[in-house]
Length: 171
Image (cartoon, rainbow, N blue to C red; front, side, top):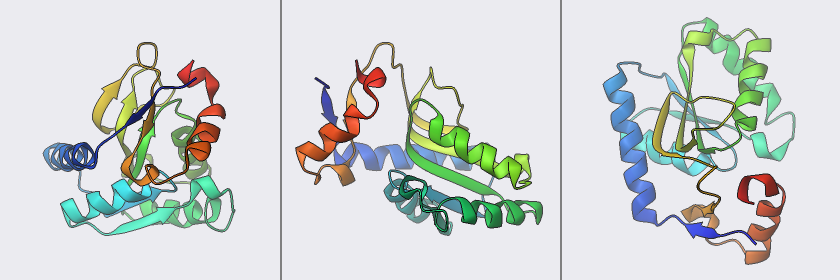
């Protein structure tokens, strides 16, 4: 049975502020923050407010092509025109989401140096690396299922079902 670990709203806000500071210190200023749906939308909104940068979104979790893959083609074109895109998600766990987005952007011809990724939590054992992170975790040591503030309103059965989809991460 998974260990569900709630992330308090105050911790979430502190993580967003850490990301904003890390981005500012890097000297790489994105043209847009791109929230990755579903888990990256709330962090992207907060990061947009913290930085004053505009936000767009890609709904990866819906698996509805018009809202997931099609926008990536348009975003890739924007990078070729010089715009910089910072994709934001809640967690880089296995790296599957980030890997899929990177591959789709590369296929669409995105300018690689104009695309970066940020997450609140970054599993150091992930297949994909992010450019900015608020906190590093090690899935070999920490198997918790993190419950972010926007997930806290979900029924327990829904959280159980989400965790059951990836048993290798929490076992």
